[in-house]
Each structure stands twice: as C-alpha cells, then as structure tokens.
Length: 279
Image (cartoon, rainbow, N blue to C red):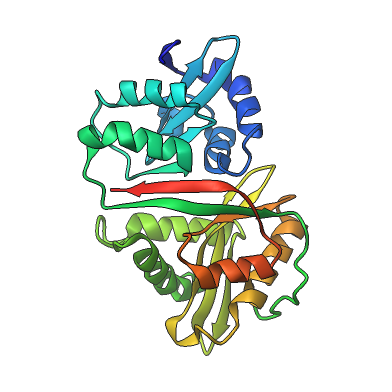
C-alpha cells in the first residue's frame, strides 16, 4: 500500500500544511495552533511534522512532539507513518486524532511501542457555531492572574481524574503550573468560585482562527448532580464565540454520558470521532 515515501517537512512547505489543516479544522486544531505559533522548523516547534504525498500534493501529515497526531491520514498514509515510526524510540506521551488513523497507527506500532496505559477508541468530537439556547451562568468568568493559586488545585484534580496520573509526578508540577498560568494570562481559563473555591472550571486549551477548543472541563465532586454544568458551559461557549473564534469545539469520552448531555444542551453537534492512546 506504500506508494510514496514519508518525509520530514520544513518551513518551505508551511502553506501546503496550512491548507491541509484547513480541511480538518477540529481534529487538527492543536497542530494548527502550533504551526501558526512556531512554524515547521523542528528546533523552533519542538516537534517534527512528517508528510505523506508528493511535493506537489501533500495528502497527510503527522505531528510528532509531546503528542503524536495524524491529520487527514488515509490508510496508506497510516501504513507509511507507522513504518517510519516503528524504527524509532517512542518519545510521545499519547497518540490522539481521528479514530481510524489513531487506531490504525496503534495496531501497527503496539508491538514496538507497547504496552499502552489506556486506549480510548471512541471519543465524540463536537462543535458549535451558535450561541447556546440556555442561559449562561453569570458567575462563570475568566480567571484573574491573582487567582492561579486557587485554580491550580482544581486543575490538578481534573487532570488526575481524566488522564489517570498526576501532573505533579514528573517535575513536581512546575511545567503544568506554567501551562495553567499561561492560559490564565491569555484570558483562556474560566471558573466559578464559591467561598474562594473553584466549583467549575474549563479552558480554551487550543485556539486557532477556525475554532476554540475547550478542554479541562471539571465540576467539584460535591457540586456534581446539582445542574450547574450546563449554564456554566453555556457561559464559556458564549464568551468564546463572542470574543475568540467563530466556532467552539471539544471531544469527550463516549462513556461520559452526563458531560455529553451538557454539551448537547449547549448546542454542540457531532463532527467526527477521535481516539486516544495514553502511555
């Protein structure tokens, strides 16, 4: 099935990469944000972008950094990327992207990179371009720079619950705290505070000219089941659409039925299926 070689792309092919990313603005959002910010030079992007296709017609790309993310990867591209990567040591902490490509890659790489800590094969990818029909929670707002210390414990709890490991484990949480601080300073972190504690939080973890991708949605355990999440998410979506990007997107584990109901009430519609392999 391998008909053309995989090659590492450089800055001279940036426009071709950007055109390809425009064809998959939701699943490729994280890659698009990185390319827009740092280009394709590996030393500046702290990652490599592998391309599949002729120099006149780039068909697929694969981002290889902290995450491995295939974008618009056909079956033949998946085979070619896997053939290239199987000879390399695994450095990424996850594989994430469209489910068919991710699961195809993992089927071919598991013998070389396995075992995985977790495989999540069905994560609905959702998006909306309409203001929510439900009333937003007026108490949900952007987090201030002086409130990072209040937000950080909630961010750690969310990450640990969602990913299954603590972000404090590797370096005492310094890198993760920097990331949380960056999001707060950029006006991309939201929370509702009650008595100085975070009871709801969410971030616009990825922002491109096409979409703002919400991640890190979390409700404090003692507040779950009280119905605060829908209005809180409506506030996030409204602000993001009015201030940041023309669409809002996110992905969710298929088994998280309460969250899926919240997102449906806020107007999100399915636009695909992602999968994640965690190491």
